[in-house]
Length: 443
Image (cartoon, rainbow, N blue to C red):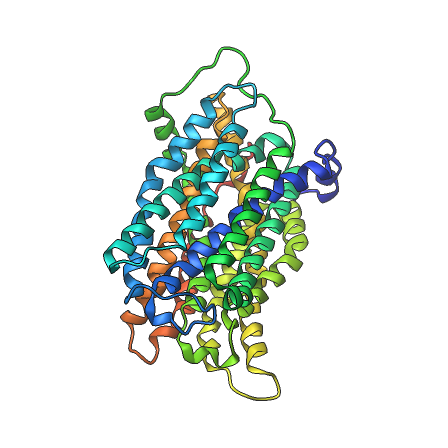
């Protein structure tokens, strides 16, 4: 077991202000990501015209836009690694990361805002509108997220520093996700989706740019650069087995969480006898619970190690997500229906805390292993592939949520996203069990 006290005492040079400013960037990314994964399909699906968000319904089948959302993810196979590769090789007076963040942020927010303003046209034209803007959105997301996340291992060199920085990111990630859930559940019925997303876009742009005021970049790779070509850089990344094990484990943690979000947001209308805004207020329960438990997740990460903590989170999600099968069966009683649903969803809180606090610290260790092997800082390449996993989840989760009701009998299909999420998390735990933490840390 790691000595907690000795780890914490090394956490000196990274100031609290720098940590907070850096973490604010994740607030903007999480708001934008939540809105895309949870609300695009219901917004474009006329079957959800009575959804509590009062979203304007456009397409006659949610499957069409879910498929469009999934297909737009193909651009990330190129965009995420390429942005990481370019950022790792960039030399400028402003650093390797921040120029990409500065230029990508406004384009990212602009494409996000326009997604919610489709033309009054035929179904296929509206689908093309969504497809083009979502593609632009994901390219710009890569342009900001890969360089932004790559700053973490450069800024924080000790395990305690990385735990603190990743926890701060997790706090802002959860705050952003909670803000988006509240906005869709409470504000869009009052102001409409167009005005709500415009306000969220302005807020996100401010937070994305505020992150640029954080700590100055640490100059890496000084001296004559020994650059890797793109082909070799990709090969070195995709043959790094500890990274691939982490990558698979994280994917099978992130996607089940998104599947829960998408499944609740797209649930049958009969679930919402609890009134308008029901989905958003149900989802707030595990988000706030995760926020409260973030310090515990950080403590476990420092004391027991990232591998143990991430495994515990995966197993908790695998054990509790199947209970969401009861979410559609809330009944009047001493406990109001809304609180019954919140309590069920709140069971996920420990897993949410781990998911939002631990993975980036694990990946920072993998980046260190890569540096010891190659003598080259390639953080953005690895975090670019991390972004690929994150956005692939945004594409696959709504599609799976739309498919699941069609794969089972009508009376049980809408309730199966919880068990499906639990099964995926269990598979992730089995894979991540083989993550060689001692080898990665040089032990």
